[in-house]
Length: 115
Image (tube, one colour):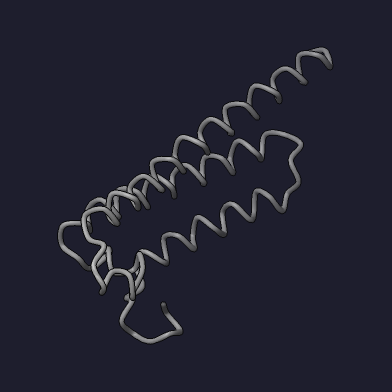
């Protein structure tokens, strides 16, 4: 394959990665916004988004948003690995992905260390 074919392929992978990242992060932040609209009382203002993970009407919305964000970030990292993007960006996206998953699993009422 010529150099121009490789450049076009890397460019299209980069565009796919950007579209995937924007779409999944929009869904993630949209789910957070929906959770805030559902319950924006004093407890939610004090505890932040962690409260949405234990408040019954928002649990499924929050899990869906986090899950979509996790899948989107992981797939974006895979796309980045196919291009000439720096290796630390691929590793960084995967670390953030695991951090989001861990954030979803940690209880918010177990002190400042976990919150």
